[in-house]
Length: 194
Image 1 (tube, rainbow, N blue to C red):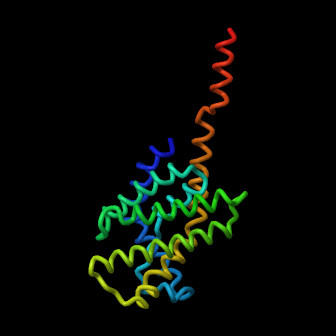
Image 2: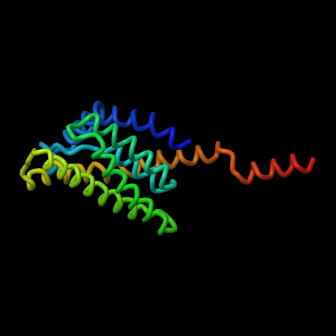
């Protein structure tokens, strides 16, 4: 069920990322401009789709994470100048790493989630920058780090905890509503006995 749910959730997240979220981030930076001067005049963005894919892949199977990465990547590429499939490839690498790390850990700690978000954001931004370089677009790397990378990392670190909480709520709801295989086996055994 989670695989099918990826389409409406990620379409909504992509539409939000393209329309409302940049305005909200700009409003927040404007309000906090004196407190956080590093964020003034920046082009960073809150990567809601990447955070949703990361949060989903931490507590799901690898195939479900790959479906979320594929759908999210294609939707991101439709809204950008990057060739279709570029973001999907980056998100699939992120899903593989996050899923592998989550399976090695007994419990997901907040510090681990923040570290995974930091690494995923860095990887995704560098991957996107390299894709733009391959397309022939070149930018000053120091300017890109200051204007894009650092603000995007800050926005994602702030937004990952609410995003993770919402995804966990959806995943728990799906598990409660889904019939378990042990229930199905006991029902079949009861039917066979009578």
